[in-house]
Length: 118
Image (tube, rainbow, N blue to C red):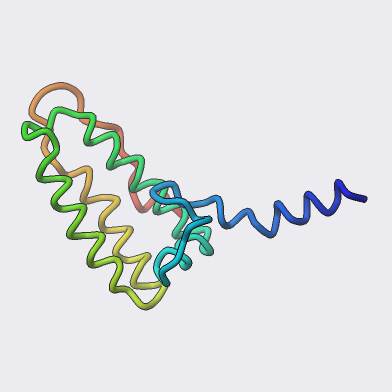
């Protein structure tokens, strides 16, 4: 019987495990809570975090300074969203835009495209 309760608890809490760019257990803003409670937004957050990390590991010529600056500005815009649609639209665009950064030398990161996320 205890095993069933554990599985039920894990299923109920599973949406809290989606986002990788921040700890959903510490979500305090509307935006963070909405991302953590939406499977789609969680997947988009995961994809953006992966794309961003992989692009920063590429040779962008400026050590990723411009990409980091763009990301901070994007987070500020994201935090002004008041609906799930606003968040999804911003995330889809950013998932793709992060990978538009030109790589100076070496291999361009293999990025996830927003159209592949359902």
